[in-house]
Picture (cartoon, rainbow, N blue to C red):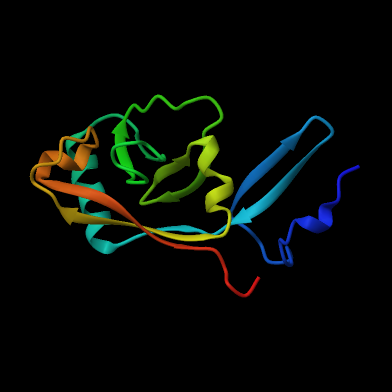
Amino acid sequence: MLNLNVLNIGQLTCPAVFTFSIHHSAFTIHLPMTAVRITSRAAAIVSRVRSERTGPLTFTIDGGCCEGTAPHLFEHAVLTSGAEKVGEVEGVPVYLQPAMVPLYADADVTIDVVEEPTSDALSLETEYGLRFVLREKLGDPTR
């Protein structure tokens, strides 16, 4: 027997644009996720990248060993199985890797950009001596 009372999800009466899912062999539960945002400076970089590329762009957020949760911007991204679309910024879909989805279920996330001329990441903004970073506010202390 599953006790859903252990899931402190609050009221789900407000419309949620983005969701994540908990899958079990007997059921699926969709819970809201806070909208992903982008700063105006980061949005300008996405626009610049888009103007110089022809393929579709995708942001991915992972928990990698080297760059942590830094968002990566790719052209023609190949997503891992189970990656969840959690938002869209400047017309670019944002995906979380499956293991990250529960961790960001109650997060307030903003994609920003900083100068980092020596970055060796594969993300497209590094061509301009910049690096996308994730500004996050995890959890709601009132829940």
